[in-house]
Length: 293
Ligand code: NAP
Image (spheres, rainbow, N blue to C red):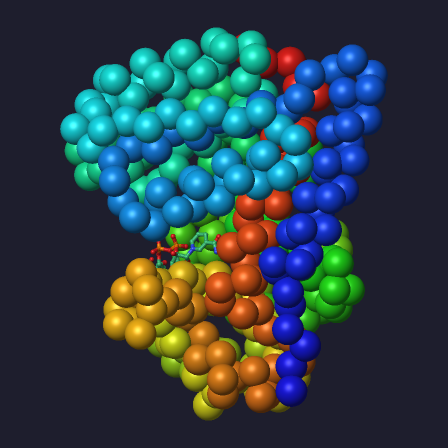
């Protein structure tokens, strides 16, 4: 039976470490780190994620500002909000919760964020710095996964690592980070996607599988070898009348059967999600040390 990679517990440990650093700052007469979030529209999952980020800020002693904008917000209006945050010296870092409504060009918005306040690590400048191994904000979810591997002392050197999904926010950066000449990293990486042939054969050779495609219970026991390390990034709301809110959260991995073969596995919920929040908070503290535009 696999060791469960407990993201909830580890995220709280990291938050406790950050809270100590915040009180040290305050003792030195410095201000609280300040994270802002822009939420456009009424998407239920996005509202939940942003609420969790705000709550985590309170827990570690950060200041937080939530800017809620209606679904009908124009691209131009959103751009003006971003310029305001870029120019607001009291804000150390901010995020624009994705996805945005379809009438807004996500890339255009991301490129407008001051890279020194881009605590989600999505700006092309920060992605470029990541590729070149220069100090930067690493994208929050991949960074949370690295932290998991590091804190649980999971061997990644020379291992076969398969990543399923090549999104800009998870799969693609993850493939770069796992291939870097660092620990955690130095893996031999295969980045797979919807056009990949023979995915099952590829997965069966993997020592580590990072699954981020958004298809509930996609990875099954017959696709993995004994002793594999499984990182499940997927979160899908599946209707469930037995729940008070009418749904449950399901990962991309068929947990019950894959956990019997794996050496380590992340649960959903309580795995990668809380680690993403811990990374965002870490990036925000680091943002306090940078001189902004
Ligand atoms: P995304 O943008 O939805 O893209 C999905 C990726 O999966 C694409 O690259 C797609 O390939 C690939 N894919 C689809 N079907 C496939 C198949 N049958 N075989 C192999 N690859 C396939 O991905 P995302 O934004 O990274 O989100 C993925 C999941 O992670 C979602 O459930 C999301 O909610 C979750 N998520 C969780 C966190 C967290 O903090 N826990 C953070 C971010 C995302 P193509 O490129 O060929 O279309």
